[in-house]
Each structure stands twice: as structure tokens, then as C-alpha cells.
Image (cartoon, rainbow, N blue to C red):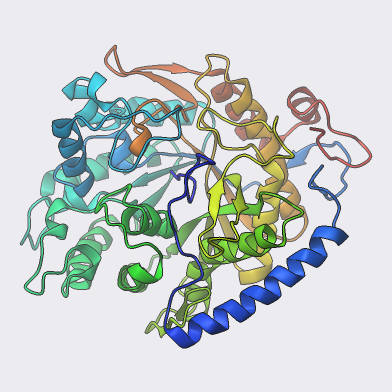
Length: 542
């Protein structure tokens, strides 16, 4: 799961320096480019119409059916839904609990770095087991099958396989656990989609090496990662065919190394300050891609390997501000495209810096491009601090924009925008690996609207040439949402943490089941959940 790429509180500023990074000569070049962007932004501010309605591709209100081999799935992740031994996040959670860092912020979605919202109210059983997936995975997988789903995204946790430093072979109980999970899926006709790194590492990975380096900056980081990936490939190919090496690397870098919200909790100010971690993640992806394909080939099997990126729409806070327009472009380029461009080109180039680093073997190491999408953000500049934009979720001309429980704007058309950009930019198959919304209401009407609206946008993107292979909803069940604790509800199925993780399907679960069984959207669904669709333009009113 993702969080907004900067403060969700409009008045606060995290000091992130998106532009003034790199060596001095590059800084002057960056200023020159930025000045051109500001001038261009001034012209656009006058020439372009108001934000208003999204300009959607016309289409009649008709059934939107997907190919027969399309994957309809749900997702969870280990640290968020099951007990994970000896991870960096487990260690962080214990530290938060001991120090009672339970600050809630002004509202859900505004928990300060270093805290976990309301974490102290939960008993140890809940803090340890999260949503209890490992206690009742058979029940949860059966629930997905009953909905007619044919894909289930989970993570294999490095910390579960290798809980202690120095291990050369994985824990046999952990291997047996994942075999049982995948067997439960396969027996129900469900395709496992497996993530190798979903923000979480073994706690020992962050012990300092002889040079004082920790985590991905250790001299032996890639060797340790390879031991893990080798074990995964050896044990789970061909049982698993679809692999995601990294989940949302920009979220991990931003929250772990720029603002210090996630472990390891460092505050380096910008992505250039975390360049070695950035490069290490790219190398880790290359290594995993090669290992998974090599083992599959040796066994006469085929695998599909990629990574998934959290894509956001970035728009100017004030559409008439040249500075806001320029900064929105810069932030969007750095957040959405730099990492994916590196995988495509083989070179790590960070926007407005002099960082241009070739990564051996990286170019083209994606069989698909993974897309996670949730929302849009608004970028506001300050002429007194022009290189430190504020990124938030409220724009002055959209005061009544629909937002979820976390305050994230609902912007389905942005899904179409991101999918079509990915399709044109990389010319690869696309797998939607996360999409959903936080809606804790019993009737979860917002989630129902969101489901239909976003799947509609995915169908339109397919119609317009994007080779989309899957739609995976986040999440099957409510779970632990990182700094927001247990209060953000993303599940099709509600979890009652006070009563032994009791599951209760929300109305959206039945709706998603109907969509999966129909392999798309019927006209009845479109008219019921998007009643403002105009048959002549197919554009939802706001």
C-alpha cells in the first residue's frame, strides 16, 4: 500500500528539495531548465481551460468485457496481514510500542513520521498477527474463490525465510507454509502473484557491516539478497509463475530515506541523498529477474517477472501559477518515471540532478510493467523556497472533491491517464497490481463506486491500445496500513480485530464477485454505480 508522496497536511512542509541536488554545475543547469518550465507554465496557465471535468475518450454506455484469460485478483502483503518474525518493521513496531508513539495527527492520513496511529489500543495478538491471514489463509483463499477470482497477490517475506543472520538455507517451516498457501490457491484455480520485497527486510539486514553500512548499502547486500532469491526460486518455481520483484520502490525510498516515516527512518532530504539505496534496489531487481528466469528455464517452465510502481497524478495546486505547473511536472517525472525509465534504459538518471549511473544488465528486465494507482496530488510552490514544493491532497478550485477516509482524492480518470502513459512509454504488457480505496463504512458505497469507475477506466485504456493483463484489488481484507495502523479500511472484507479477526464481507465484495463472474462491467452496473455517465461523452459528472 502507498501513502501520499509528501505531507497530506497543506500547511506543513517537509523540506524535500526536488530540484537543488547534484553537483554545482548541474544545479545551475537545473535552474535554467526550471526557468523554462516556469515560462512554459505561465503560457499554459493562460491557454489551458480550467481543471473542471476530465477530458475523457467518448464511448457509449455499453458492456465492458475483458479477455477471457484476464486475471481478476486481490492482494495482501505479509507484514500487513500476517505475523512476520524478526523483520525491520516488527522491530520498529516494538520500538513504537515501548515509546508509546501513538500520535494520531489531526485526522486519519496525517500520522507523523515515527508513529503508528493508535497502536497502543490493540492487544499483543492483534499487533503480532495483523489481519491473521496466516491463521486462516485457507478461509481467505476460499473467500476469494467464492467471488470468482482467479488471481491472488501475496508476498514471500525474506524475514520469515531467513529470520537469523548467517543462515545459508531457509527455514523449513517457512517454506512449508508458503507451499500450503500456494497449494490452497492452485486447488481453487487461483494464480499466485508473488512479491519478493514489499518494503520489509529481516531486522539483521540493518546491522552495520565492517564499514558501518546498513541495509541495502551494506557491501554484502546483494549477496544476502541473492541467497534469499535463490531459495525462493529453488522452492517455488514452477509453482509460482508471476513474480513482482519490488513493490513501490519510490514509496520505500521516500518514506524510508527522505522523510523517515518507514524503517530505517532516515531523513536524507531528497532522492539524491539516497542514491546508493536507489541503485541497490535496481541491482536487486536485475539479480532477481535473472535468477527467476534462469531457474525457470532449467526446469522447462516459463515465468513473468516485473516490478510495480505507485503512479500518481500530480497537478498544480493553483492552475494559474506557473511555479505550481512547473513543479508538478518535475515531481511527476521524478516520482512516476525515473525508476521505470531506468529499468527500460539501463541507466539510473534522477531528474534535475547530475546522477547518471549505468546499471549492468538492467535494460529491459521487465516482462510486464506493474501499476499501482490510488489518487492524485496537488503541487504548490513558494517563490521564497522554489525548490521545495509542498504536495498535498486539496486544491482550491476543488473544495468538494470526493476523498476517501485517508483524505486521498478520488480521481478515476487519472487511472486511464497513467495506464495509457505506461503503455506508450514502455510498450510492454501492463499488470494492475493494486487499486482500491479506504472506506470503513458498513455500506462502503464509495468503494463500490470506485471499483466500477476504475475498472471502467482500465477497460477504456485497453480499448485504446494498452495491453492490460490483470486487475488486482487492494485489499481482500482490512489490514495493518503502516503508519496509519489498523484504522484505514481497504478490505472488501471487514476484519473485527476485537473478536478473533472475524471476517464480514462488505457489499463491495459481492459487487467485485459479480464483476469477476461477468468478466467485466455490465450496462446495469455502469448505470447503477455511475449514474451521471453521459451517453454522448461517457464522462462522469462531478
